[in-house]
Length: 141
Image (tube, rainbow, N blue to C red; front, side, top):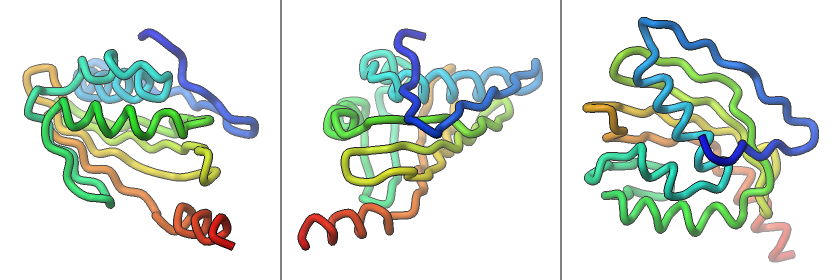
């Protein structure tokens, strides 16, 4: 995959294990995550179905074009990232990871991805919004 994931100081990327029984969705999820973590927007979008739906704490993102807008808005703020674990089976996978951003460090998250026809059709992103809220409060003084 083009571009390696950025790793912040103190973050150590852990290896994931891919077996023949869970390779498809798990490998797609891992490659997708490594692409966006590495700043490769086009590479990441290549793993998504045209009509992908993402449900995240900030709201719903519908379609590959809208997901591009999300990534292009978020990635300039990304200063580090690490995959903790990728778990999966034939049709779905969960990627647990941390990111460092310009507004919060050690931001922990999980994406649950559904795969059909070799493409990600659904992303459910879960993370604790408290670190971002706290960072915004610090900036506001």
